[in-house]
Image (tube, rainbow, N blue to C red; front, side):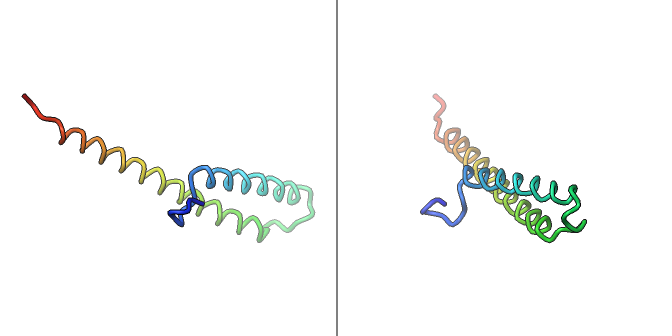
Length: 82
C-alpha cells in the first residue's frame, strides 16, 4: 500500500484482482469436479472481495479523472489572452 494513504495502489489492486480470479477458477474446478457443494462459501467470499476491489479501482479511476480535469481547468484559467 501507498504509505501516504490507506487506499491500495492501482497496481496492488490489479494484482489482488488477478489473485482472486485465479482462486475463483480453482474453486470452480473443484465444484465442477463434484468435490464441493453447489453454493460454495469461499466463492461467495471471493465474489464479495472482488466487488470491493473493483469499487476501489473505480475510485482510483474517478480520482484520476478529477485530477486531470482540475489540472486542465488550472491551465485554462492560467492562460492570458493578449
